Length: 406
Image (tube, rainbow, N blue to C red; front, side, top):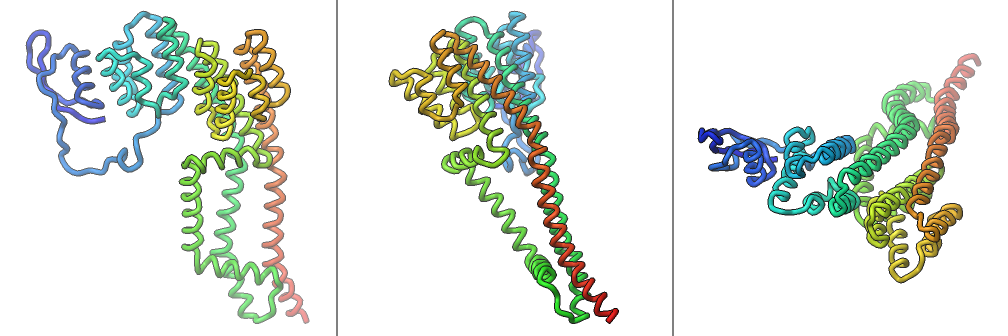
């Protein structure tokens, strides 16, 4: 968002001036027109001094699922009430709390004022409105049922948000415990073991192997803690950078589904997302080839998206959806049977919703037993750490006590 100084006249001819925030000068002019002010001059406001723009350093804040759901709910209510689209977008621009969404809607309002359709205007902001969002809006505009398109988007976004929240809640406990253990070990190596090492050195007795390993590890940690910290931070940053590349994203999405315990959850979440999104776009009237092309980037897994693209190419060659889905090798036999029946009976969208419900039930079951499956592993790992610490610290103390008695 930029700040503009403006001068204009009201309907009564009075001269007014002030400042406002808008994405561009055209958006500022449109805001003034909505306020019944005829703009005379609009200039970009000059900053009083140099300041650091947080958005330039870290990029603009992302539009969350709550903001999108609220936008869709408001647009559904306004379109049902018969409010013109350009007026509805202009009103939502003024009341939106998200800075990024406000700037995008301001630009959409300008494009609508120049004769562009709502779908084409939203398509220029792909980071906020993905291809599925734009396609459903396009179908709603062409069929005159824009409110139904927003209703489907509300249900879809809310399901996505609920799934993410369930996964986050299930992973919170193991991640928290493992993080606490790593921090505790780091503190023990830095502050606790060096104190015992001083006592052992004064005695001059030969230390057992576990104690020598602990002391050597502690000395290395104390001497090169900056190197350990740098390697950890560099590794995390390098990993994050790699998985944000196309090849890295494909590799990580493939490996993620093969992880023990949690790999199946990631796979079923992506397949559920595919089935529900595909059913929603297909029942809205989108052709099957275009629906597959739209759904592939929205599943959130590049490996599965690659398989969906192979399904699209097979259908494009004239094969049936069931046959190409079988060749992809990512669906279970039960799901393949449901797809085949849906294709033969013409009720593919309904059966795809059933497929999505089937995968959602599987995900719920997996998430419920996730904590039960991870907890024994954490307990075993904690037990090994405690055993190593106990052997390394208490064995020499016992030997010193025996020596003193002798």
